[in-house]
Length: 377
Image 1 (cartoon, rainbow, N blue to C red):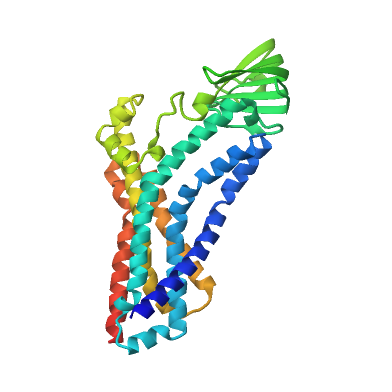
Image 2 (cartoon, rainbow, N blue to C red):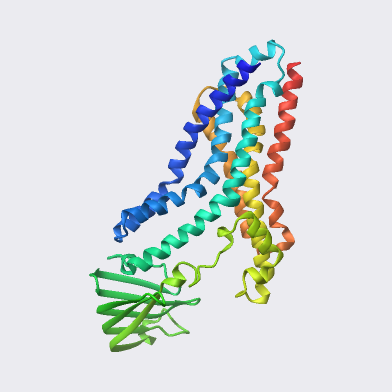
């Protein structure tokens, strides 16, 4: 029995590591694009590397459960196809005995995910926000990339045609409000000044033309007002870009312990919230905590469901296992999206919705494994 356990555990871990590397790389494509974007803005390579590394825990929180499910499907599909499961059963072993090392590893991986989701991921997320703030503090003009609109600043869209250390040219600024474009500012050139104390980048624009759409008919150009000015100041608040001046923690930055404390006293954790928003913020925190925990437990749930599905597939090809795993993961993440969408409707209990796929997977897995074990006897 020890030899069989060692054989299955070794095969599982080897396939799991390979699958994890593949899924992590695929999920990192977005981070790679972001890194290239920051590099094109002139941000130093060391800062980009740090930002890149701080994104790893977030990626692992999703790629580990996906890798567990895919590995279980591939492993037991191959064992079933090769007749190894039948041979083990012929030796008097039950299906629970055969699968016990894989189930045990999935439980350990669930505990690892609890640590990642509850501590490592929020701490890394908060550190990443600080690094992004440091990018602005070190060289604020680096975030103004030539030839594209910058949408990082609330209420503003900024376009810079060309830039140097202290000057910009061919500048377009859209000042936005909830109804749309409030003002369109165009300037041939401008100078840049940064106040380290207030963390505000001031762009003084010269030779300015201001287009102000009519509030009632914003699409009617004939009703727009045109104003010219020699100078026009635009302030870019880097404190707003990274959160606020104190970089206070948001829900994704909080560990499990901090989430529980914030849920118990929302007013103390978020003193700037309006009273009517307190209940919604509390539900958001509760949903966040449940999502993280459900995502961690999904390693165990996916294993229980993946074992009978893998045995039933009787296939050695990896494409079938990957296809099934992607479908199941899509369903799981769909419930996460639904729970996020219903945060403003606490009567629908979005905090419990996220547990539906986990409980269904565990229940179906137990039932199917027990049924397969019973039929074998």
